[in-house]
Amino acid sequence: MKRVKLFVALFCFLFTTSALAADPATPEEIYENVLKGVKVLQALGAEGLPAFNDPKGEFVWKDTYVQVYECDASRIVGQINPALRQWTPEKFHSIVDKKGNRITKMICDQPYQVSAGIYDDSMSLEELTAISN
Image 1 (cartoon, one colour):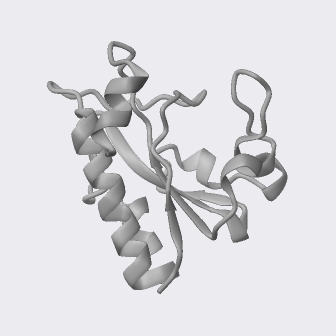
Image 2: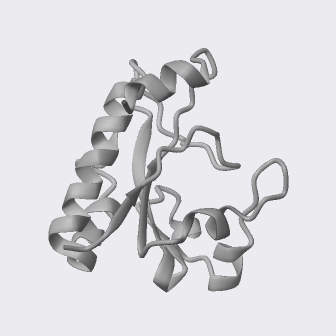
């Protein structure tokens, strides 16, 4: 079984979705869909990656999406912005957070990192953590 690490983004990357929905995705939905993505990759490995790039597929809903950091290939799969899916390995490894930490260096300890952004600053870190427990 492929090892896949669950990484729910508790911070907002520099990227935002352009999708507008009447109802925003809830943190619970986001967490459940990230878990679903992990299961797909555990079962199918690289053969499961195309499902994340389908803009009308199961991993894109409401105002968010699930993406996969394919660490061994230094690329992002499932990013709804096609330009970001074309990043070079150098660009992939240069992503930093607000404090200047290289994100991919921090998270790429396994072949795949499955994540989804939570674009809701009304929830506390404690509330978000409770969802994953």
